[in-house]
Image: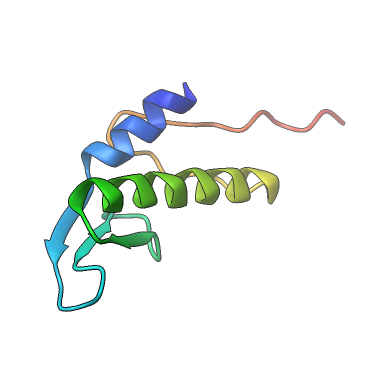
Length: 81
């Protein structure tokens, strides 16, 4: 379920060239503030995946809901009372 969510998010990633020391820029539409750069496209993809994983685990640790990515949904279990 987690890998399905991560893969779905990465499939939506958008990359472009920017004028910077790390000229490859990537972001995932719908996930505000989640972006990465790299000196190569592959490096940018790896950095974006790392940022995505951190974002998912941080959101889970705070109990925040994760937005669906297409049909991929990652729902947190409800706390037991």
